[in-house]
Image (tube, rainbow, N blue to C red; front, side, top):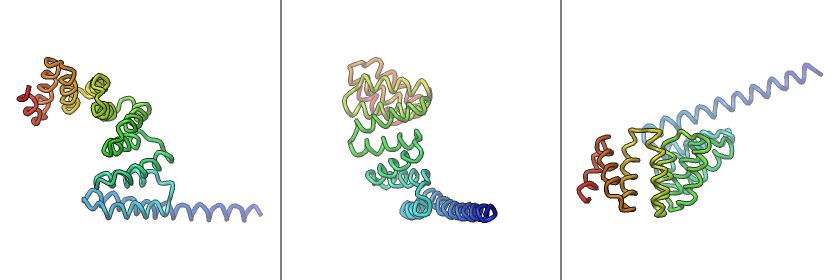
Length: 199
């Protein structure tokens, strides 16, 4: 009896390994297709991965990224949500927040960016993106606080300086806004020249 149980366990493990290897093959092909710009092909490969292994969080996450690249934000949100259910990582929350922002759900986006920050407090992009969502809701003070944190984490974050400058200008802080816009140019964001000319 003990031999039969060991044999059955061994066969189950071998079968699971074979499924895992097959899923990984499709997943890697999806990554390759995505890197080559074949987004539709990548979605197909990630879908095959998920059919083989429905618990493969990275396949949902990367299918969500690919759908976002195509502007398919509702599908991306569904994929990020599934990835979060399986493995709640900060990147999936952050990317779901970006997809929600693209659809105009800035409050939902703020909730996702906040969750990403709770998981990974040093993730400057989450502060930056939350600041952008707050700016869309005209919460310029809240946006500035998030941009402050983004540039504290990454002092070379030109876009955060730029957007903080714009938020300061909205609050009629011309001096602070100008200083941040100039800093963004200094860091290589040459498009900021246009905003500076309009001061």
